[in-house]
Amino acid sequence: MGNSPAVIETSGLSKRFRGGQLAVNGLDLTVPRGSVFGFLGPNGSGKTTTIRMLMGLIEPTSGTARLLGSPMPKAARAVLPRVGALIEGPALYGFLSGRDNLLRYDAADPTADPRTRTARVGAALDRVGLTAAAGKKARAYSLGMKQRLGLASALLQQRELLVLDEPTNGLDPQGMREIRSLIRELAEDGTTVFLSSHLLDEIEQVCTHAAVMNQGRLVVQGEVAELAANARGRLVVTTPDTGAAARLLKERGIADVAVAGEDRVSSELPPDDMELADLNAELVRAGVRVRGFTAERASLEDAFVALTGEGFDVAG
Ligand SMILES: Nc1ncnc2c1ncn2[C@@H]1O[C@H](COP(=O)(O)OP(=O)(O)OP(=O)(O)O)[C@@H](O)[C@H]1O
Image 1 (cartoon, rainbow, N blue to C red):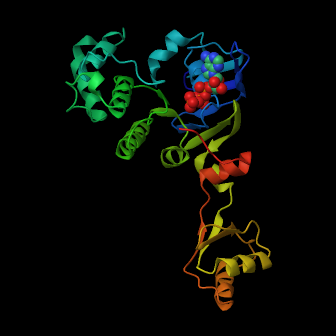
Image 2 (cartoon, rainbow, N blue to C red):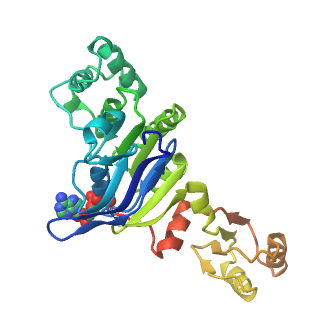
Image 3 (cartoon, rainbow, N blue to C red):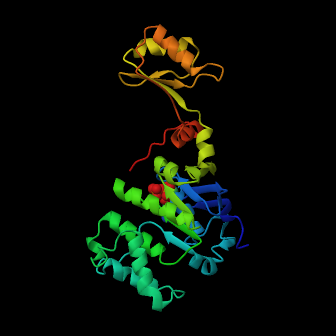
């Protein structure tokens, strides 16, 4: 089972909390080995609850979860040493330095060789860009530095699977870029990475696969490129003559024409038998001053809106 192509597989996985809240509802999730898998959904959609079940931290109410081919939480002892995890922010000792936190964390791992500990900790600090700050007490770290230190703790050992809950939470844009490129590097080294996020563009930039959660249910899962391809792109015309442009597009039978701001009209793309260049020429002939005319690629956000009929609007 260890070589099963899916590193995470759930079937009908559900969690109802004592208060009655159905946080996860009949989840069938398949995470292929070697993928960078984005687990996406607005706040409260059930991502953390799912991850906690996957890691054997809480019991499902019903359904099953397999991690690296073995059932959870039953096989937790055998499986978890092969999985690096960063969940709900790292548990750090503020009075210890970053380096000492990692040394302590490594020492708590019975499979970690003490003779190579210092080198392992040094390499992990280096990997997340904390070497210069390694001697500082963790309580003096910024949120982003704490997040990196947590990530370093998940990188002390070579793992088959890394599970990261909102790994870029609290990071500035530069920090986010660094974590994203680190995730890509890890994936190139053969680690499967499963990360949750409420940021669509983050998932688009770093993930090969994604699953979208909404109110405890799986909306869709698959390859990111395919998910985005299923949503049609949009036509965007930049012009000061928005009224005339919108009128002409509507007359030509183009759907969902909308004026956005002072100089933008957008719509669905015309049907395949209508040449974009002809449409552009027609606008110009009608006296519309066309400054820009583009068919914008569909994004994962478009796909999400198309699938749920809602904007991906999250708090925080
Ligand atoms: N221990 C708990 N007891 C009762 N309800 C809970 C508990 N943990 C989570 N919930 C509820 O379950 C739902 C899903 O929460 P969860 O934390 O899994 O969502 P999430 O997608 O991870 O969101 P976030 O990004 O905000 O963490 C929420 O409505 C939340 O209030």
